[in-house]
Length: 203
Image 1 (spheres, rainbow, N blue to C red):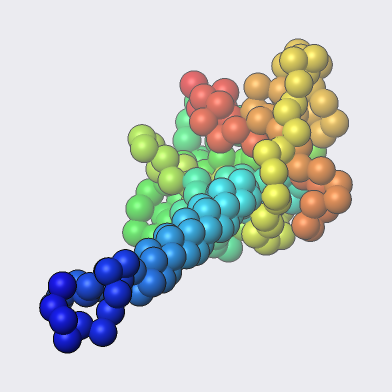
Image 2 (cartoon, rainbow, N blue to C red):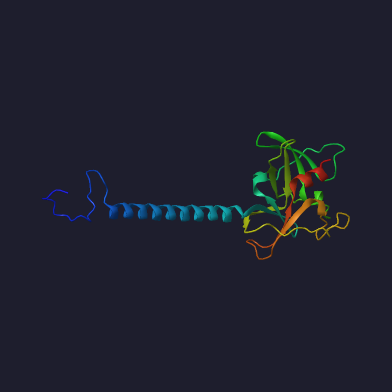
């Protein structure tokens, strides 16, 4: 130790470029706080995505007094009902062919496809064009009510549903994937499984 050094023998000398101990501790503490805040923000963002992913969106349509929900992702568009050209020998649910957005599509009466009694879709109703990977199809319905979101998975149709004993509205259970609860936005409705419905109606 130099004689002119005022610091005692127990003092740690700080050489040039060395960070003081207190400053280093404060920097480490700030880094830990930033990491914790970032982790919490990411957790909140992930929770928000999970909550948003739990919501289901449906296009709700009416056939008579019955209300049916189609997964919105499977609907390509809604148009006014238009005349159809009958197809000889077609199944009763197939109204015929119609031009929709420059394409010839098969028009399926939803009520008849579900086995409901009655005259079928009203002349002033709507066509719901579907996103199908094979033959272009549109559903004829009395009217489109609108888009509805529900917060959870629809209630299952249940194993007790028997296709040979259709539930209310004459609908076979093979075309039902669940039921939206009565307390959901827009009221209750039956959720349809479109692939199964089309397999049944268009063999």
